[in-house]
Structures are given as structure tokens and as C-alpha cells.
Amino acid sequence: MRRTIPVPAREDEYAPPEDTGQAVRRERTERLRTEFPFELPRGYVDGSGTVHRTGVMRLATARDELIPLRDDRVRENSAYLSVVLISRVLTRLGTIEDVHPGIVEDLFASDLAFLQDFYRRINAEGHTRAAVTCPSCQESFAVDLAGGGRLGES
Image (cartoon, rainbow, N blue to C red; front, side, top):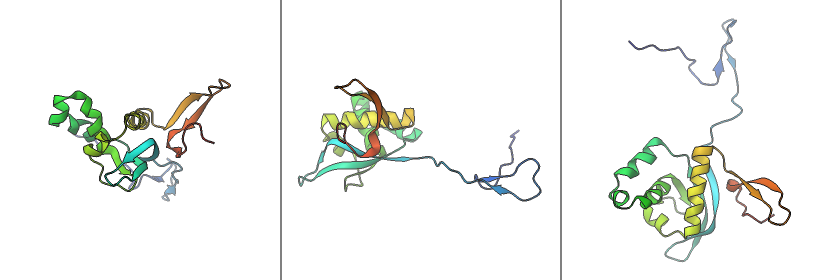
């Protein structure tokens, strides 16, 4: 037997227990953020020599993490998992909207490492902030990796 709980027709409707028949709308002040812009440290260089540094990564779904496990390239080399996974969640890299594993393979190692860390931050930690320490004064502070600026720039 299945039990269900009645829910309002819309998520943003709320009827208090002493409701007089009029539903009170509650504006949702915070929406779930599913896409995160970034800027690569070096950038992807395409066949014509154009450098693509900015892009957008979306939150991963369970399917995004499961499908690569069936990929023969991943079965042969488990390190390839991150290449396939990153290519699935990148929605744009510069002007390229069809990001595939071949593009991720051609990234500089520092850019791939950046994207792997970025993926971990938005999917596991839920934010794009990183704790850093100033090498000169040793003061600790947070920077937003999705902010578009590069570390060390004002």
C-alpha cells in the first residue's frame, strides 16, 4: 500500500494551519543554482588556435556519474573516468557548446586539475569558494572560484 501526503500545487504556495481558504504566497528568496561559470587558468586551444578560457559547468546527476562506468575507455583505464565525467557536465567552454571527451583530453593538465577541483566543490561542497592564505602576510580568506577573476588579481 502506498501512502501519499497532499502537497500544494506549487512549491511556492503555503497555507498556514489556520487558513481561511486563501493561500498565502511565499516568495522563494533562494533558488537552487545548477550552473556555475568559471575561468580556466590557461585555457583550451582549439584547432584554429583560439583560446577558450571561460565556461559553464552544471551540477552532476546520478546518471552523469553512472554512465561513464560503462564506457570501455574507463574500464580499460580508470583514470579516464574524470575525462568522461567532466565532459558530461561542461555545458560550454568558450564558444564551444558541444564539449566531448576529446576536448577534455586536450586540456592542459593544470586546467583539468582546476575542473576536477571545481567539480568536487560544486557537487560535494555545494559552493565554489576556496580558503586561501596570502603568502606575504599569512592572512587567511576565501575566494570565489566562479567569480571569473584569477587568483592573485585585484
